[in-house]
Image 1: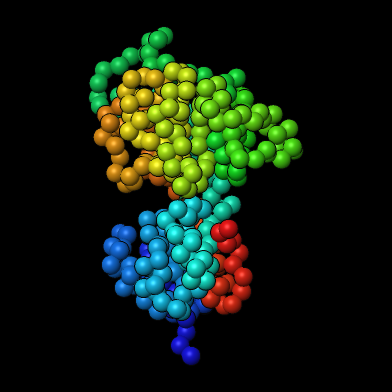
Image 2: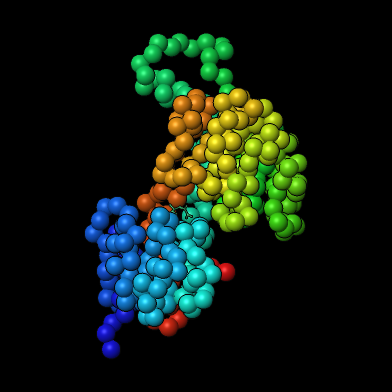
Length: 321
Ligand code: 8YV
């Protein structure tokens, strides 16, 4: 019997490739870019496992292109909105993601956005780089303090919790909105108050999104909900761009109906709304949430272990569902 084929859509850290090499015949894309849909379809033919990244759209057509041998799609990401789970389930294909290993890095980045936008770091940096004259002044480039202010965490899962813990260390109060009550021990630790989403938006000084992108969360933060926020409040999004109606966000920011936004993700990524780029009161990052050497290696290794397990007839470590 030929060895199972494992297709990797983008070069991964060697530690991950070593694991996959033990599990089957490896095909790794040599491109320094995401594969075009037609290239992806060609690449996966006959695969037993595919290791994907967030920009690889995995739908029924792609799964069919792989054929009956396909048993696993291992996404190198905690989010899996690029994968049609229903289509995978229908074809008996296991889908895995990489929870846990990126929690701390993503929470760190969220705090960087929170501090960066409330203390106007992007504006300050742009000013220095522009070469414009400046001098220290009592009222020069004042931001707003976060001590005693309320962080509204939308989605108190692993990353939302890690963000809330950090924010507590900065003296913030925590409110959260979500589908479930948080465990009592966590509520006590964070001294967190659960609010309905609209109430959280109306009362928080910083609103931070920590939700997966699903049909229910697409445009969850729309014009109506942005209008509920305080004019002094800022929005932070290191989750998924389409959770926010970007057009409505640009309108709210331009009219100063909210004070600012720190964004690591965009609705039509990698495109960024020109209206956002033109604004001063936003801090914009190119999807860096998990972008540390350690974290990206851990994500790739976990995805590789998932794929190797399924290919070897073992249960996956971190299946989605
Ligand atoms: C990744 C992410 O960089 O894990 C996620 O869901 O958004 C980021 O941590 C990206 O998805 C890599 O594919």
